[in-house]
Image 1 (cartoon, rainbow, N blue to C red):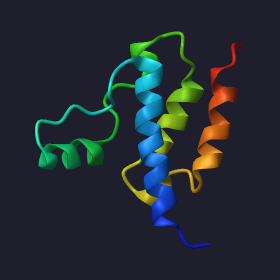
Image 2 (image 1 turned 135 degrees about the vertical axis):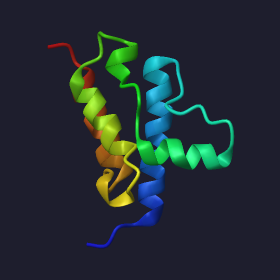
Image 3 (image 1 turned 60 degrees about the vertical axis):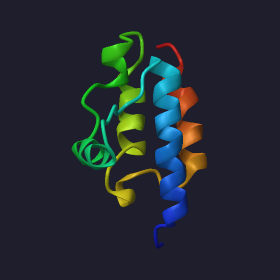
Length: 92
């Protein structure tokens, strides 16, 4: 199916919120809109588990996917993204 641009944007926005909720930090700290585009295109420089070591690599992978620069690489539905989070946060 074709990618719904709104869903892709929703996933990205929710990914930023979840990143901040889990780490207390924003994934990108740009000085300008141009710098924001550059930072976004380069991807996450610091994974959630590097900020909070008790977080699993699974949550890193979920947020890497949610915050992928290319919309087609993200979760295709914000519900799929949301449903993946609780499983990644459960203790081993």
